[in-house]
Length: 410
Image (spheres, rainbow, N blue to C red):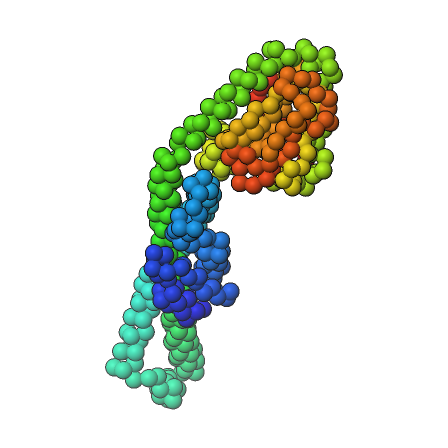
């Protein structure tokens, strides 16, 4: 057992180098090692298996991705991954430290027990030494002389019994000392095993702490690059935010102006059709909710970078027809950034929908017209801030975006 622990410690010492020098190496874990050592080793290796070469990934993003937007998105994902990795490393360090503390306490108690055992053994050793010195000075018992010099049978028997008792006492003393010396050796061996476990755990702890520092450095570097990109993209992001504010104002104005007409035409029932009948639920490329795309709407309740996707993306073939999800008043808005070409519809009872990144509108329709549910209003495209053909679809209630899947069952 002890040899295996020291072998694992030696392998760990020679195999591990800081991440800045090379990719982190896994430690060799012996299944036969004590559970605490094997578990800490296995947990460390599991973390190595999951982690990415963070600095290399950051360099790849900067060198291979030319679009600043794509870089921002990739770096945001890297930072999120680093946060998860750092949390796992911190948990492993805390867990290993708890095991080390427990073993250290066991070692202290074991040393105290060993001290008492050694003291008791020392007293028995001195008794044996005294007995040996007496025998050396007076000679061993001569049973034949005891018999010949006895003056009576009773005296002879008393001498024989006393002699046997002395011999039995000597044997007990020798047996007790042999047992105590064996216990001292076993206690020393047990303490050596625990000390070896602590040494192995400390080595693993050192490797985990070095990995943590590398992760923190990589996170700081990624966040510095992200801040540089934010400066480059701040004007574009401000324009997109202004577009969102304008859309909110447009929806509010349309609801005031057309709410009654849309409701009278049969809209606003809270029932919606799938906006791309030719491409069903399997075409959803991104759902509603928190994500790491930098140009999405800011949402403080989402994790860093605090962005939320306010609708669903349906990625059908370019030019796929887009229909009105419910009856209502339609408005067409051409654009080259943000949502690109987009359509707003008011349906009544506070419901409205938005259709973004369109390639073109239905030329037979005009803004302000009442359109029936299921009528083709536009065609899927990739206009505006888009990485490929898709439809961005939103459902709003009282001008607040909601998850469309609540109504569409996706």
